[in-house]
Image 1: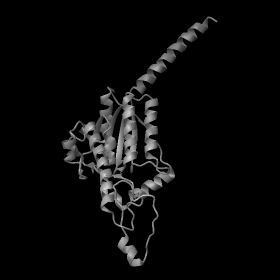
Image 2: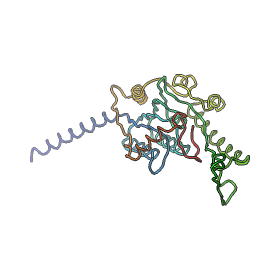
Image 3: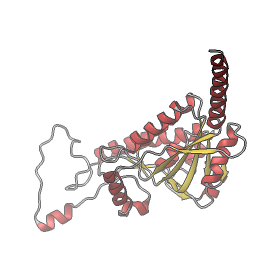
Image 4: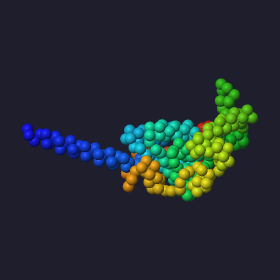
Length: 286
């Protein structure tokens, strides 16, 4: 019985030491999450859902800084906005966020990155492409040549807008332009707020053009030139981590069908144009 107090005492010391070591290691953690591919959110391609789930894990682990590695040509408006909002909520919980731009961080990638505390890009990163587009193909003359016609019964005058069988009417073009203009203003305001720029200044280069990381630095769109490794050390520095940070990769794994779809989407013609997804009536951050 006389040994019990000693064992209990040493047991408490060991437990306290383990907790102290755990805390010290935990304080050196830098979460790494990768946004790789076209930004969208569907049953077979749930990128936004997977990223938001990963952000939640950062919060649950109480990791105080996260590096989001973006390699994306853009995507849909809604999915980009959901990821942006999720980053804002994570920051509100006390986590610092640094975006590291890879080969391409354009359009929707720019939108998402503006939620971060800091943005780092390689000197040759392709970025920009700020704007919104709706597009479709028109096969009216081809259909006429091969004898294909279409009959439509619709509930309203705009229900078959962007039909491949006919040209847009003036009213339809005006309606779509209003939608595009509204989405564009949202995009410009996000950049202006995130990068502390005047909206008029943003509009000077938010005309769909692409530019390099070095040019983005001159425009105030990023904070620093650097690689992924540089971004990790920069993130560690932001929260006072001394020495070698411990990188915790919390990127959600892709399902097989997700990976196949991603490869197919990346190899279509739209990739070279840095557009979002090939859905004929869905607005794309281009």
